[in-house]
Length: 256
Image (cartoon, rainbow, N blue to C red; front, side, top):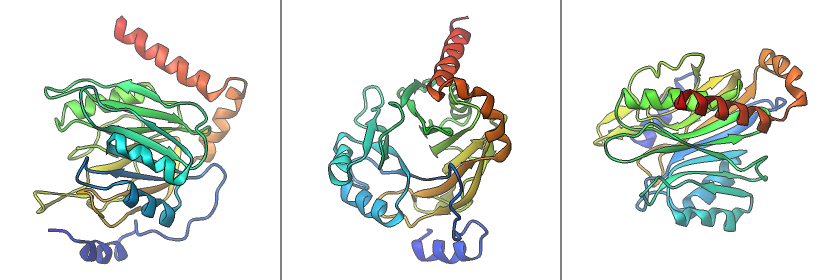
C-alpha cells in the first residue's frame, strides 16, 4: 500500500517533483481532486488545501451539494453539475469570477448511470473537468466527445478511471506520473491525469492524499507560444463565440 511518506520519497527522485515556477503570461495553477463523496474530503479539507496551495482554479469530482459551502468560506465563483439521478458530480471553484458559466456536456452513457463533464472558459484556454467511466473503451469514447467541444487550446483534467494510454489524437499527457489512487489499498494507479492541446505544462505534482481515496494533483498550464500566435487572428470573436461554434458543430454531427 502506498502511503504519503513513500510518495514523498519517490517524488524527490522524480522529475515531476515541483520546482519553483516562474510567473508566465496566461499561466494558471490548477488543482484537481476526487473528493470521495460523503465520506471523503469536506469543505474544511478543501479550504485548508486552497489556502496552502493558492490555486487559480479547483476542479472537483464526486462533489455533493454540501461542497457549495466552499464559496461561503472563501468567496469566489462556484459551479456544480450533479450527475443525472446521483447525489454527486463535478464542481469548479475559482477565487475570481468565471468569464462565463461553465458548459455542461453530456457524455456517452455506461450501463450503470449517465455522466457529464464541465467545460470552463479561462479566456486564454478551455478546461474540461472530468470523471470518466470505468469501462476502458467507454472512457476513451467519452474523451473523444469532450475533445469535440473544446477550443484549440485546452486541457482535460480529472479522474480518468483509465489504465494505459488515453489514445486522444492531438493531446499530450502532461500530468504528474506518480500514482494517485491505490485500488484495494494495494495496487497503485495513476487515475488522475491532465491532457493538453496547445498548452505547455511548466510544473506538476501529486499532493498527499488527505481524507479522500485519491490524491490531489496540480498542474501549471499556459498557452504555448505557437498557439498564442495562432489565436491572434481570432481576436475579433470572443472565446465564447468559439465555444458556441464547436458545440453547434458537435450537435450537427450527432444529429446527422
